[in-house]
Image 1 (cartoon, rainbow, N blue to C red):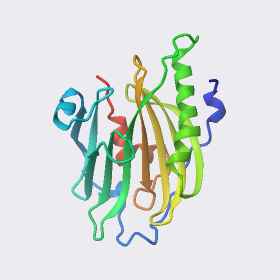
Image 2: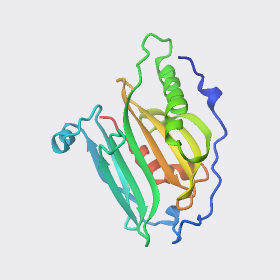
Image 3: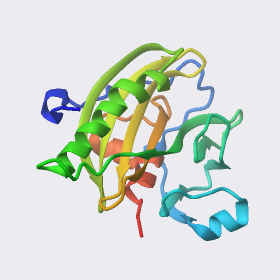
Image 4: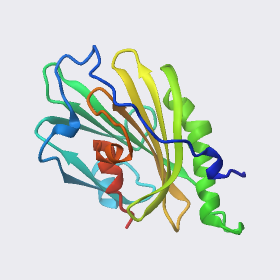
Length: 223
């Protein structure tokens, strides 16, 4: 499977989107003060013992919390994900901000290749583009891929795909797909993040990293 990341790279940029007609109360994630990453979630054998959900590859994340944001965590949700986090604005009515699903995957170590690390990134990029993106935006309007890039999440190597689509019930959305590779094991995870651009007006890489799901991803640690 041959794929050159450079051939897939596109100009990254999301246009700032005004509050949609569906948003009845004004809310801007990036105007919140005191946003923290206080809740630590460890997925390991203790998690399996407590909840009965096998962990194919242990990892730890920090999940952002704020008094104006409601967090819903769902272990082994419908659809086959390993875990799902949903963030909503504590407004009346409550409004969807972002969510992220974490799904187990396997990316071969490619040890027979001259540059195994690059080959694994190439396999990951192709999986995000050709398999995961079409499923993530199925049934929505105006799906578009804006960028596919190799990226490190702290010490975790990976690839992310940035795209947009329109949800008829919410409005303009960003979708971010990532492959979180373990440097020494074929087991991995991919994630699917959906971001309501009306409440989290992502416009560049810095604001993408400042989203709730972006903060979560950048806290990812493999023991």
